[in-house]
Image (cartoon, rainbow, N blue to C red; front, side, top):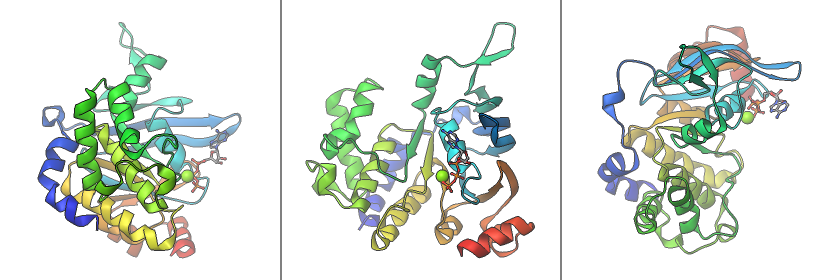
Length: 281
Ligand SMILES: Nc1ncnc2c1ncn2[C@@H]1O[C@H](COP(=O)(O)OP(=O)(O)OP(=O)(O)O)[C@@H](O)[C@H]1O
Ligand SMILES: [Mg+2]
């Protein structure tokens, strides 16, 4: 089971896996979307979107297909560029560079590459490197992107595999693992970069039903036992209720409403939210 190794390593996890620098905690939100617009051609996907995420908060994004949830995560991961507006991390522009005169200019590719290191993402399709063993899947980015010493990266990778309950699979190839196991490796790989923020995009929706609970349990444990900030797109409403302090309901590229899971799931204010929840629950 995932829980045991995690609980065993909970103290180590909060030290080694997620080093939260409280000196940066100056009361500013960790993430701020400031009138963010994303267009593809004439199609406005995000429409002057404003929202914030506090450090350590676990936020669930819900909303109908096409409402822009994945786009939000891809913008944060700097896999896409904003069409307008600014994303701020810790009071610093993620999407922009501050010029000498104080104005904001779109960030260079180099700046985005550096920014990307602070954020980890786990996708619906696990996207493991098929030609690499499990251990190397996890050490690849710390060694090649962060310049971490290989021995140190391997030690940490083994700790993380223990954390996700897969210490026996160090030498396996992804094709030799179940979907749930591959997703656990993907989670370990994201954590190996010691991200400040973990983005999760429907990480259980490609899994066979019997594998879903184990992965959700692992994520709940990470949410409970570490200080990592999580932004999670999911249709698993029980999970959302369990781990998140805030739910944001999106429709047509805007926040329709936000609040505690209790409020949003039991007593939503907007008809659009009621319709959506009726359709998914
Ligand atoms: N690369 C792209 N080029 C053109 N349009 C795109 C691109 N990526 C996304 N879109 C459009 O942006 C809108 C939002 O897509 P997004 O994937 O963010 O939705 P979503 O809320 O994640 O939906 P789902 O619940 O189905 O995953 C959709 O209408 C989609 O067609
Ligand atoms: Mg999506």
